[in-house]
Image 1 (cartoon, rainbow, N blue to C red):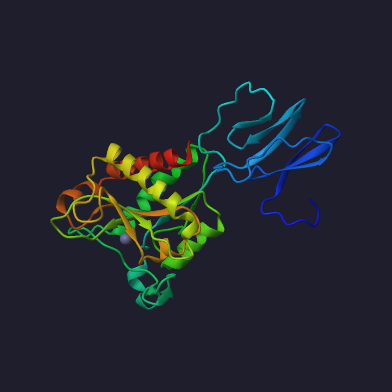
Image 2 (cartoon, protein in one colour):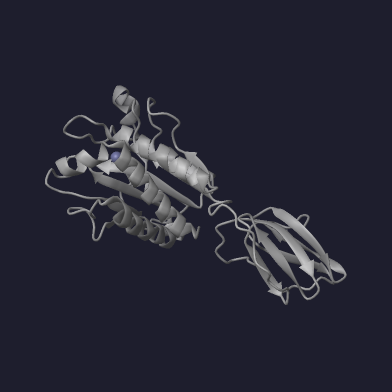
Length: 302
Ligand code: ZN
């Protein structure tokens, strides 16, 4: 494919029928010489990259990084080897805020463009009445979640590497997911809502021009997370935010600027005594992480 524009790298080739096939990581197939073209995965949703190809009389195979096999022409299907369910996926986890944000108001309050309007770089986040900070909850859940996802074969990238730093700003957090071309990105938060209000909510993007292409996928991701969180954590859907645990938001840089499927989950209401009694417990934090992992796995088809 020399000199022709390609969106994805060529990752495999196979000789067949007096010619050859070149195969791109997104499943695109290019036939040369007498090689027959029997179709491709181009334009079809693939959560795992194609990493190999093989030709037989009458057709060919494309091999996914998770061991999935796609057959074309009359190539017979004989089964696949079981692989880690999330192999080949890239997931960005964005633990909201940072433990050092309160120490650097000039940095945190600087205005950034959030795709629609100006917004503060970040905030210090919420806390429980007992003083347990949201940044620590978010960080702990992200650590448990990263371990869960890595064990399932995913490549996981966090938007910050400690809970003692400052930032990054919300626009940079979105850029990290975009640059990684993540299959899914999740911002992890806990809310500072009304004292009498309970529960969790998944915040989803609203089309703003920048994120248009990923709004439908983000909605699917949000629904999968909502269902898993209901099933696995005992936390009710929010009594004060959204409908059935889902709330589209047009005012958040992290969702406005995303070009990959992304949602933000407010795992609980830190201001509510019942929610707070749960969310400070490591066991519940692990449960929340397992629920988000299950939602991601469901969305990614793992
Ligand atoms: Zn937050």
